[in-house]
Image (cartoon, rainbow, N blue to C red; front, side, top):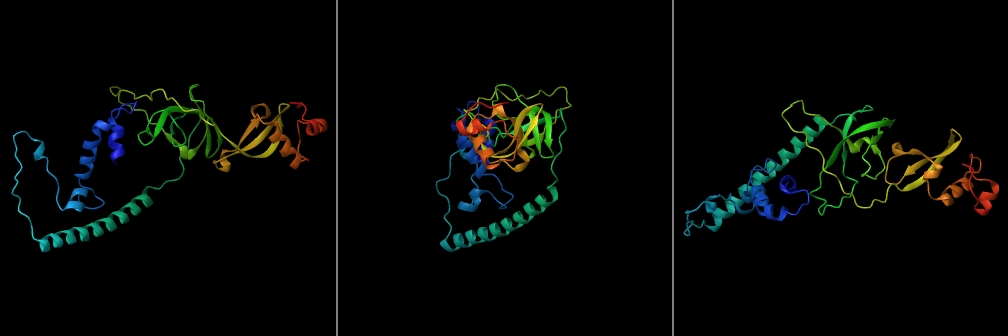
Length: 265
């Protein structure tokens, strides 16, 4: 929750968040939390902290009445009892809400605008926790499978344009002409390793050129894509796969396989 406060008030360079951290933390701890039925201050100390000390000319009373040990013990026991009840009720409400709001996978059409999750992107901004959760909008270029889509990306985003449906969400443009469109600022990404080949699944020829069905590391089977041979830098991996699958069509001649010569296509 504190991260949400900071994300709203920090600049793109994230160099001002330290100045608002105390206010964000105080607001969080002094506000009523539905899950526990009280504020964190009340749960920890037995009272909410007012803001009178911020007002000029107001003096704090140094002669506060100190409650007896027994009454203080009873007070905290009651707080803990209420906490347990509130947490149990909150858990039941969360489960009910999750069950009611769980919906089937969203469907996207070619040309539709979507936002991309930054879950697997690493930018040059200093704090991952304060990073934008979604960037865009961009549009769907191609539907590869019911759960895998190719997205049209700007050239500065040097990442693979294939995304699982879980990493996309529908973008809704405002119909209010007076509301300004908030555009995602240019994103500076760290050097990405790109998609790493986990395995080669199959081979085919298309218009006389060899293509390989690639299984990508850390991605589900639905994200497998057919890639042209020239886009796969490591011929040794291809040759090793053909040695294990000698009955499959191959761009390598017998001499190529034995001596590491050139490929036909």
